[in-house]
Amino acid sequence: MKPTQENYVPSHPDICIVEFSRDGQYNSCLRATASFKAGQILVPLRGLTPAPQRAYTSVQCGPAREDNIELNSDLVYVNHSCNPTVAFDLSSKDPARWHLRALQDISEGDILTFFYPSTEWDMDQPFDCQCGDRTCLGKIRGAKYLSVQELKGRGFINQWIWDLVALRDGRTVTKSHL
Image (cartoon, rainbow, N blue to C red; front, side, top):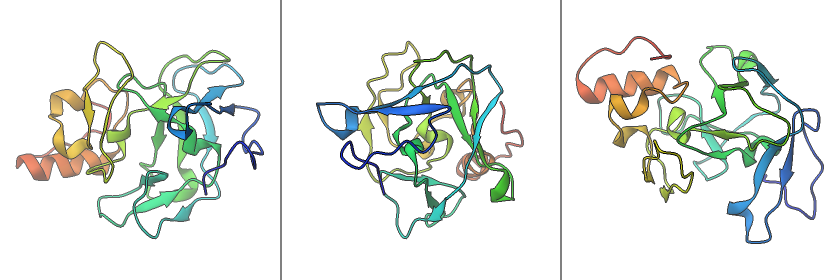
């Protein structure tokens, strides 16, 4: 369940806090409450539950359409950016090792963002990106609709996404950190 301003209790106050928008939930964001170095693990992912179906709050955790989890925490407010600050690293076969990792140096107060296609193959709710970065892709629909070149340079892409890209393109991609 996604926290609301009315029922909000921070789940990770040592690393982040939700900044609720007056303009609606899609404009809310997650701000860092501490500084982090690129490569640093911000938090292990705990309290995850299988998602009965894909939703805007779920995160894809494997190659199948039904491989989705609910984060059940403030982390659901990590918004998309084409130049992300963090990654949901779900690359381990052991879910106990899944974590949120900094892709670049993050200062206290920075907004935490991740590249949705790093976990999402074919999104049920595509949207027009508003990140404003020079590398912005515009319409975000999932990795299925992006070239290898468009995926490269995003800091991190989970391996099952690279595997699905390889199947789509009829070739082998073997590294998750291209």
